[in-house]
Image 1 (tube, rainbow, N blue to C red):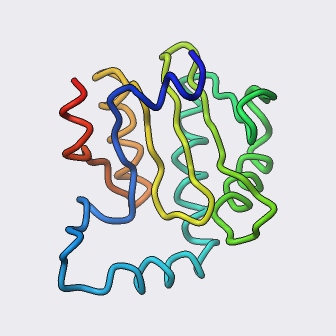
Image 2: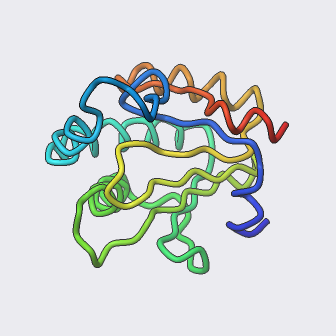
Amino acid sequence: MTIDEYTTKPYRIVDILPMQVSPDGRGQYFEVEKYYLKRISLLCKQYTDLLLKLNCYLDIEFSHDGDNWTRNPAPETFEYWVGSCLSAEPSESSLFIALQSEETLMVIERDCTYMTIYNPSEELLALINQLVCSAGLFLWTNPVSTKNK
């Protein structure tokens, strides 16, 4: 499947928050998001921990462009790529993470605090949910994505 094909599939969100914030919410979501993006080392550690633990169970491939993929890179490379993607540096792109055996794509968008998981099986979600919890993150369903099922 291509990246465009994956993005039409049902998806889940891994995030620092347990559910989507309402667009008319009374809190200060965007200010809090900026605060967390300034703490790149914490976010990088959380996502790197999740991906490294997942890589103990499955082969993982990484790409910045969707064309060139690196399979099972060194842990330090995981950390560098995740940190580069989460930073606000304009030269860095989104990070695509493929789990080929599961037909699943994970995407960390540049300058965002969440990761999207496209086309996950229930079995994979059960594993990811445990790993997400151990990393201090949350796994939730976007209400819009459930309409695609």
